[in-house]
Length: 262
Length: 365
Image (cartoon, rainbow over all chains, first blue to last red):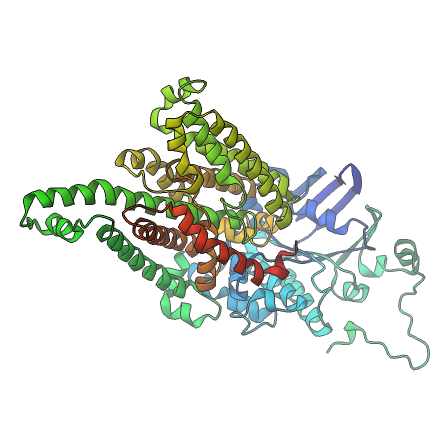
């Protein structure tokens, strides 16, 4: 269980996140949604120990501030929005970096095959020998997810749940790979791990999230199940956009929802 | 490392994009290359001394026909060529590995101790000890003895690297342009201060100082090896422990931290190690440029950027290349000799321009 109490983050004297309470349970996908600049990424960076914060964050009952990088690396893996690489690594070498500090949770001898398995999982079978820098943005994002999966391959280790922190994991992906990545997250949760994901697509959020945290101007605007949270009023208030939930387009206007996936 | 020994070479070759097998072969070849470079250096020089005889004597106890000539050859080989070779290997390895580590630290293939002012800072420290050693700094030199020179060079290099890192890095991102320009400014400052010291120097000190301007292995003695050898060996021995961390750092500081790397400790260990290695090298051989950028760059093309292989390979290739450059410096204008810094600059500067041209888009000044 990840618990955050009254977490605030200031950057250069400006409050970016103010008094957020948050929790992520094992077995669940916790989605953080909200407009651009509402503090989602900043909050996730506080949760991952990357930014200084006030308040309290506990990872499986331990105070995050008291944990060393190598200890947090065993408990959770973090997928940033985008990653630039400074040297010409191959895809396999990048994915293998996921094994650098943490513990994948597979038997020692199986670690050698893990990069291939992770690449297959994100639908990049056979990409191991390509150079990371030559891939498209969406492919790079999936390579990074494969790296993150290697770090916490077993969702439960030593009887403790582990977590995936995903910052917009599907934002640069086509619809097929959006569904693949979200189902990886759901599978990770079903096998006992926990997922914290920043998402922009409200349909995907409704489809996959067990609990939604809505952020607005650095504060928590609402929290609860998708059914409770996604309402006309909330969307208008938070996104400043008059939209209506569950209304079909008029006439013969085509629309495609991820929920229709077989 | 454990997983690879279990997986074995068959498994490794089955994995596309795994260059560790190739890296091991290249490292083996580099070992052979270094042995060849040592042999070449041992047997070539301005004098016609026969190293083959001396080595034969050492290995098999065969005494040369002419005992007097044998003694002279033995002196040349043991007290002139051998210390020079060992010093050349130490300095070449130190400069090449320092270059590779700095490039990993700054996440930037253009970082080089010589280019960004670290060597200039080390020079300043060394020159200060030479010029002021008998006057203002007399207590320091009296206390430290032969260690004063390498320690002063270390402090100069350390100060420069720390300032450079602070200036060039903001929120975990190092700007290439800022790093290169700040390096130019720091180098100019260090050279100006060095200039003031040289202005104050007397004739004898000036002779001592000339080689700093250009770099040379000419003054190699066993005593010098004894004073800087341990520093370089220690620094080099520490570097492999940074390899995994530097690999992770290629993904950015934040991600390296998420992967479990203690990033701050890694950065400071790297900076101190590089300063020690570069400082000690500069203290004995002056400013030998471009080794730190040419060697890692060539190796990345051959074996990829994995520092677990790049660092040892850089040490081997750096040592070999410096021995070859020194062989050229010793023989091309024999019986006089060219400062080795001129040789490495003539070969290295066009190479650096070539890297710039290839990476013009990436660097984006």
